[in-house]
Amino acid sequence: MTGSVVTGHVLALGTPWDGVPALVLPALGQTAEMVGIVMSIVVCLGGPLGLLIFNTSPRGLAPHPRVNASVSWVANLGRSLPFLVLMATVIPFTQLVVGTTIGVQAAIIPMSIAGTAFFARITENAVREVPPELLDVGVASGASRWQIIRSIQLTEALPGLAAGLTLNIIAMIEYSAIAGAIGAGGIGYLAVNDGYEQFDAHIMLACIGTLILIVQVIQFTGDRVVRYLLH
Amino acid sequence: MADFQGKQMIEISGLTKRYGSHTVLDNINFAVDSGSIAAIVGRSGAGKSTLFRCVNLLERPTSGTVRVDGQELTHLSRRELRTARRAIGTVFQSANLLRRLTAAQNVALPLRFLGLSDEEVHQRVRELLERVGLLHRANHYPAQLSGGQRQRVGIARGLATRPSVLLSDEATSGLDPETTRSILRLLTELRDDLGVTIVVITHEMDVVRSVADVVAHLDRGRIVESGRVGEVVRRSDSPLATSLLPTDPAPAPLAGEVVWQLRYTDAIVDPNWLTRVSRELDTDIALLSGLVETVGGDHAGRLTVRMSGRLSPATVAGAFAAYGIHAQVASAADELAVAS
Ligand SMILES: Nc1ncnc2c1ncn2[C@@H]1O[C@H](COP(=O)(O)OP(=O)(O)OP(=O)(O)O)[C@@H](O)[C@H]1O
Ligand SMILES: [Mg+2]
Image 1 (tube, each protein chain N blue to C red):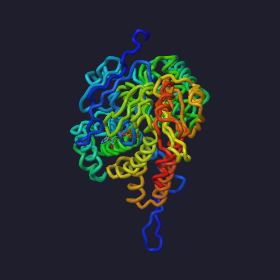
Image 2: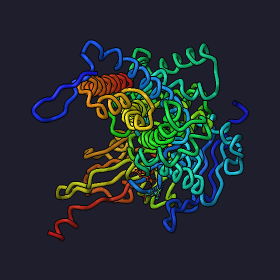
Image 3: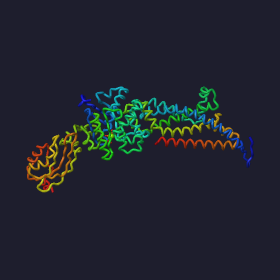
């Protein structure tokens, strides 16, 4: 890598522009992989957790104060620590599950924990927005609780869930960048390791540009999906 | 169904519902015959919707029993209750359609819960939408429908499982007279063609007069008056009769004349009574105001007339009584003259 001195500051212009894609694109792939895996876990765990929290609440289909309080407490736990702290806290657990505390696989554990707690609240809120009279429609027509959850709660909450999912994906991209600190790879790691630590301005700019672009694209797509679902 | 004619389809006895210390329903006793239309009236906050929600156990009564089709609902297990509810169609205040489903999908919902095949669901939904006159709106979302159309989709959905009982909470509130009439016609058809037992909750007396067989007046959680509509309207000192057939306040009579309030007391009254009484008494009868209707197959009427003061009140009252009409002096010119 070449460096140059500009007006007293040590600033490495770093990787020539035509070499940037070769570094950024694989990193983008890693970020996508990490966020993709994490989001599948998040939806599979956080969705049911959110439904459980809402439906055990007084307004839910099976009110149960004690279950509600415990599940709610667990979901809050996952959201109460700043991500960096959470990541450090769960290191022993990460070691136990994936056998390493650095790299993409290691990052997936804390990201999934934080994301699941996040999505549980998003699901709970989206389902809470469904007017209670619509649940009565299900109860009055002799539907089972599961049928009501599927055909009424989830159906009506879908636009809210899609909006929440968009938020969640963007938050996970942010977390993946933080996870770069433990060598998780991806855009965040590239920005921190090459861009910041090695003063590579080109890499830094490319990473920033890429992050801005993907967040915009995801938000735009999310908004379009929500609008489509709202009829 | 024929041999069940006259059987009580809904029997509510000793029903009490409290929220905390607030008693919303107080010892309600009420029964509805199979294949008839019952109306529950009462002012806002009287407990009508709460009663409606107790009949299909959306709300559990604090005490008392609710029997539908001979089944004691409060004793059923969760599973049995689900089955029993399928025989009770529900039409909610403000329709309660799922926003994200089309009219057809909304109607299909209870059928999907039953687990019918796509083929059966499709066919049944077509029939139902046709019955409520909305086949051409099948693929519209609730936001694209008018209030009356939404209400009709709600009724179609309430009928989807071919229930023997239909509960409707203010299904016609806030709709224009034309739409209201079409919905009431539909309810009458359901009773006459399918023998559905219907309970309508309403605050519109027109609705009671035009479709109900029996009526109950709910006031602060108690049934204060009830009976067959045709019979209730003939009661003399009944607030319900007065609100079912309101009369204008008696206008001031001219000197030497008497204003009479007339009320039908017989179920069937000779339609030509006015001219006949006039001829028999050999006097003119001026019709000031009145409402004459057929309610539940019976004749009902409340009228105000003005007649000469020459005739003895006993003669006049007797002449009307012969036609099944109760006559009562509203005010006489003399009294007014004294007063002024
Ligand atoms: N879940 C509840 N908790 C506490 N009080 C309630 C509840 N539901 C209804 N009430 C009370 O019960 C009373 C009757 O309510 P209800 O909805 O049955 O009246 P309504 O006759 O249907 O009135 P409207 O004509 O305005 O619809 C009201 O005073 C209301 O505040
Ligand atoms: Mg009400």
